[in-house]
Length: 182
Image (cartoon, rainbow, N blue to C red; front, side, top):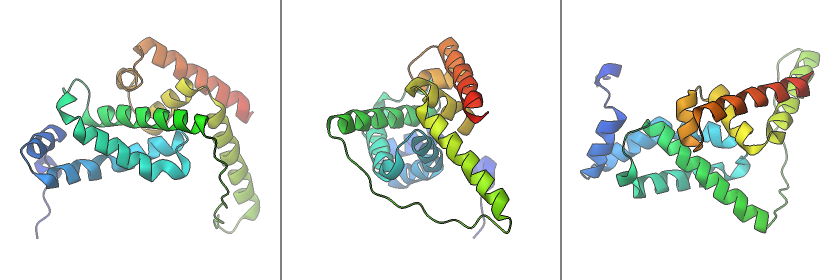
């Protein structure tokens, strides 16, 4: 079997049209293409153990509303917007019904230098806490920009804000994180 070159891979727009035409494999390709990025965003935004359910909900909403996709933003940006909204819906639901999670952290081997591994783990934990403590908009903008590499224009579309506001939120998030890690 010959592997197609990257230039031969169908675009998101082509896959969307194929799915609209009844090609189920096209939907599978879209999900496969964007799942990791959406999952990384959701986990970093605080989805925790709900990430799998949120991913399913995100792509379910996307494909049931595919006719609403106009192509003004990339498909990934559009799906991230849906994922962000699904996470907000979950947060609202959980706020009405608080749940206490009892979980164990996995033990991870960080190599042969236990001191360096401990310092690294502590820094990671401080950063995780600092990101979690950011105001919601700052956290979402920071994660989309720093983790996903999305530009301010797309961030503004995903979070339904202005480009200028996205820049300000990112700048404020970085300042807070630097202070928290000092």
